[in-house]
Image 1 (tube, helix red, strand yellow):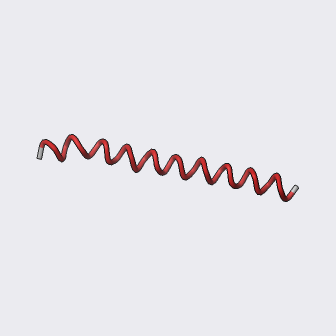
Image 2: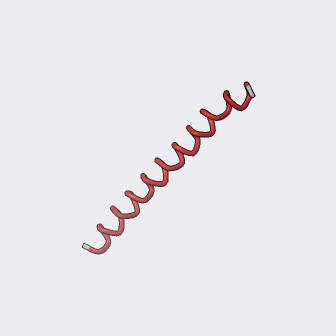
Length: 38
Protein backbone atom coordinates (compact mmCIF):
# COMPACT_ATOMS: atom_id res chain seq x y z
CA UNK A 1 0.00 0.00 0.00
CA UNK A 2 2.87 2.36 0.79
CA UNK A 3 4.47 1.63 -2.57
CA UNK A 4 1.19 2.30 -4.36
CA UNK A 5 0.85 5.67 -2.63
CA UNK A 6 4.42 6.55 -3.57
CA UNK A 7 3.96 5.46 -7.16
CA UNK A 8 0.63 7.08 -7.97
CA UNK A 9 1.96 10.70 -8.03
CA UNK A 10 4.72 9.54 -10.39
CA UNK A 11 2.23 7.85 -12.70
CA UNK A 12 -0.15 10.81 -12.58
CA UNK A 13 2.73 13.18 -13.31
CA UNK A 14 3.83 11.04 -16.25
CA UNK A 15 0.39 10.98 -17.86
CA UNK A 16 0.07 14.71 -17.18
CA UNK A 17 3.39 15.46 -18.88
CA UNK A 18 2.36 13.24 -21.80
CA UNK A 19 -0.89 15.17 -22.20
CA UNK A 20 0.99 18.50 -22.12
CA UNK A 21 3.47 17.17 -24.68
CA UNK A 22 0.66 16.05 -26.98
CA UNK A 23 -0.91 19.48 -26.67
CA UNK A 24 2.38 21.18 -27.57
CA UNK A 25 2.84 18.91 -30.57
CA UNK A 26 -0.72 19.63 -31.71
CA UNK A 27 -0.10 23.38 -31.40
CA UNK A 28 3.08 23.00 -33.46
CA UNK A 29 1.31 20.99 -36.15
CA UNK A 30 -1.46 23.58 -36.36
CA UNK A 31 1.11 26.36 -36.59
CA UNK A 32 3.04 24.60 -39.35
CA UNK A 33 -0.11 23.81 -41.33
CA UNK A 34 -1.28 27.41 -41.07
CA UNK A 35 2.12 28.55 -42.38
CA UNK A 36 1.87 26.17 -45.32
CA UNK A 37 -1.69 27.16 -46.23
CA UNK A 38 -1.07 30.91 -46.09
